Structures are given as structure tokens and as C-alpha cells.
Image (cartoon, rainbow, N blue to C red):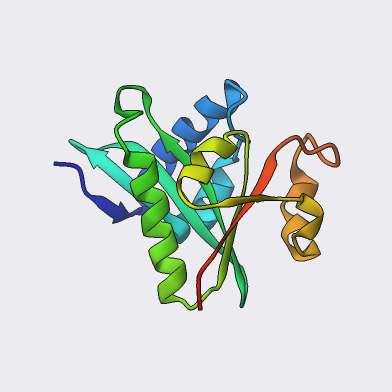
Length: 153
């Protein structure tokens, strides 16, 4: 049985390979290995026999905002609910940290809509989230959809 766990430093290269495989297919943005290492504490993984088969990260932006990013599930394990479970774990952590809103930028808005996110205009996101975007090869012509999840008070 697969269990969702916090990533360890040993998972970084596998996360990097998986995320960039999807990026090569135009399904998400590529991430440099250095960024995976720098943010390893943000990641959750699912392993099978020591191999990372799925990952997702919750990155805190500010006191009232976090981002879910790099949600990836490898081939044979897709369409089995693992991505949704990873998103739920990230949302649980955001709730535990008392972060009221979590956003994502994605090429698969329908997936995040199923997880309770609502589509918003990217312009409604605070400027502080764009720090990472400056490094993106698609900046300033972002073609991802912005969605947000707001916790009920």
C-alpha cells in the first residue's frame, strides 16, 4: 500500500526527473534540480518499492497565501486518485499553518477544480507570487490558468 510522506533529500533527483518529464510534454513547467533541492521540505511523495511514483509541493508565499505546485503522478499510477490525495495533504498542511488561501498555476485546471479550487484572473494574485515567474521562459506570456482554494472561516 502506498503512503504519502514528506520527501527526503534522496527523492530530489526522482522528483526532478518526473516533473521535467511532464514539462517536456507541455503539461507543467520545468524545474531545475537546484530548485527541487532548495524546496525539498515543501514536497510530499508517494513511493513504491523505494521509487517515487507521485509528488506535490506546498510552498508558503506569505502569511495568507501558499502555492501548490509540481503535482505529478507517473504513468501507471495516474487516474487512481493519487494526485487528488496529494493535493488534499497539501491543503491540510496549509490549514494546519493557518494559511487561508492556496493557489496554483496550471495547464490542467479541470483537475484542480475537482479538488475544490476556483478559477481566478491571474491579475488578482498578489505581485509577490511573480518572483518565480521571472525565471520562466514563457514570462511574461504565461499560458497557465490560475486557481485558488479558500478555506471557510
